[in-house]
Image (cartoon, rainbow, N blue to C red; front, top):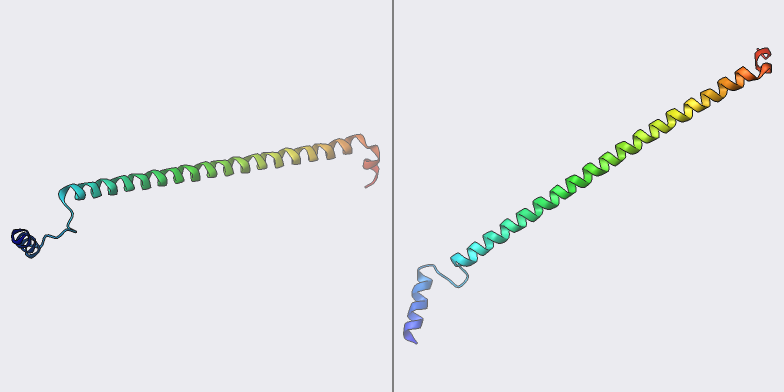
Length: 94
């Protein structure tokens, strides 16, 4: 019993304690940190991809709206032109 006590005391004096990570636990901690970093990077990449997809969808929607507005305006003007051509009363109103 005295030998074990002496060994523990000398280990404490040398700065070792039960809380100090052994090389294996330190290696395990490093692996865990690397895995966490990789997961964070993957999440960031996924978020960036989602943002890019959302931006593309918004751009497509805007383009479709602009095209639809252009078509609507063209139809509107065609209607006015046809009505003006085919309505003889329009010529005499001015």
